[in-house]
Length: 138
Image (cartoon, rainbow, N blue to C red; front, side):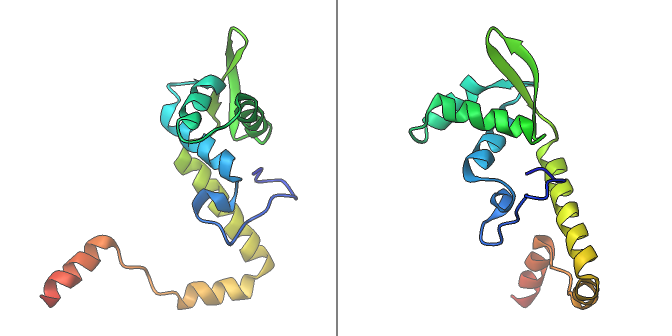
């Protein structure tokens, strides 16, 4: 997902990063964020993916190239004919950027509704406070 792309979509019916990227893109990015040291090649990601399911090398190569075009991955070097990739941002930075972009859109297009939601939203309890509440009840 390009944050500045007019064709970008937010998929409400999906979980996690799949709200912003396709299934294979998410699988690849999760592996890149874990395995890049500091770079990763298509072959390395392909080998990890094919342990889980059948997939063509060219599918992984094309998807990683498109992630580069979208500004999510970056080609920084070559080893022989293989491109070496790094994530453009850490996982946390990527999530922060896409959440900020989505909130900006909602606050720009639905300011009253967003303000109402924020004003009436009860803070979520942290897992630590849930545990202490459960301990007090016992």
